[in-house]
Image (cartoon, rainbow, N blue to C red; front, side, top):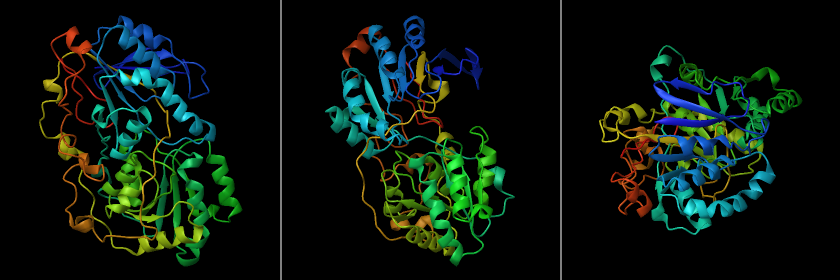
Length: 417
């Protein structure tokens, strides 16, 4: 498999091998925006020895270039939407137009992938395509818990995790902190992330008089052991994001035994509905958020949910040893999107003492079951195998067919022919 990606900075190697995977980069412009264009993608796909193209995300001009190049070469194509939020209200508003503009190319893709069932339903409606054209494949993630076995959990330590953007809701957690401190003087907040809102959050902490109880510090994306150790110190994680397709940070917190308070927003409400979190309604006042956090801090510790390694240790037909052929995964690093319908959730906090008693069900056996509610057997814990054939343009090219592999830690997929 080859990762074909972009480099807006122009300072990264054009080609390198990362963990045995070939990575190719092409220049993208403008460097300071996230809607950049990368013409070199077309040339790479036109000349490369690829059997399948898997496009990661649709939010920049990379996606239409990659889809068009693959179509011209009659290559089977897969696109994973990777929907999410965005701080720009303008970017939020133009998403429907962007999707409508891409519809001709998306409609001709061999398979469209979403991370959650509600996202599949929303894109199917917007694109006017049958749900059967979509596969639901949640991202996988597994923090190395062994790195945190000697870390003690700190009572009163809470965390708000994710990129420091407005829609992530870190400012809402800060606003609740004075009310929390009035009832729990030992409370301390760690805001874990990097992003453009950092200075605004620091100013807000000073204005609220809680700067001494707040730490704003991100963990390097590749430092998985460092993240595991930090989460192992946290008692309760609070996620008040406006929108999440699949809340990886929240799921990782659960996997390390943290308790969870979430906004009843798309992607997060399902965690509360399954008894894995307490929910507060969108727009809840700071006092209500503080009440939910206090309740969480009082609760007994939860048992961590099942780990992704349980799944990946099982041999499958999509394991590396079973793969042949060449796939190109065209990626758009750091991009985000926003288009989803809302989901309902209880307005008041609701907890289960242990994950094993949530809704009377045992904890998930492996990380693939993190998509909530549970997915049909055809899409959970196994490679997607469509009951309908790949369109004829793929079968005409060669006798083999593209297969989407099991979910991996970065959401990419492989193919075999």
